[in-house]
Image 1 (tube, one colour):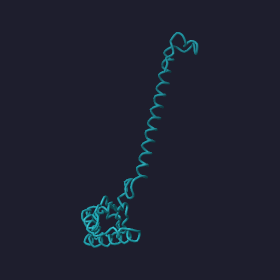
Image 2 (cartoon, helix red, strand yellow):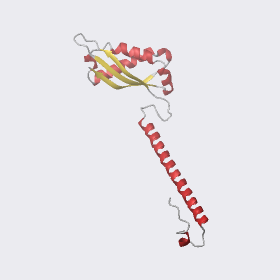
Image 3 (tube, helix red, strand yellow):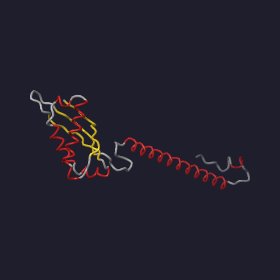
Image 4 (cartoon, helix red, strand yellow):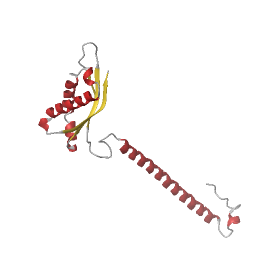
Length: 170
């Protein structure tokens, strides 16, 4: 901010006010502007942080985000060779397993190796024809649920839903 020169301008605005009073008023104004600027910058930063936090919660995958407990176990990138005599084909799948009691999701996470193993054994027994169409995919899901029920029987974990999030045959 430009300073008011002592002799040239001070007597023009208020001849009874001295240079020291004008300079003091100038410092007071500069301080107020500085405080306002700081508050505005802080408010802008807080707004950005709030928007980022809200965006993180809104864009978080289902069952994750905002400090909520996880409601489904994600099993990703399961790749198996399909039962085919003529050509090599594979199935790549990802799915989410939702227990009846959402509090048991962490317990389910502790069984991820068993779950992946059982699903790989089952899926590798499928042929390309077994994977085609909605009815076959529903049958695969139902068979996976039955197999999980047997594998997890001793844990007491009951599975409510299994959702495919990826299912690619090549």
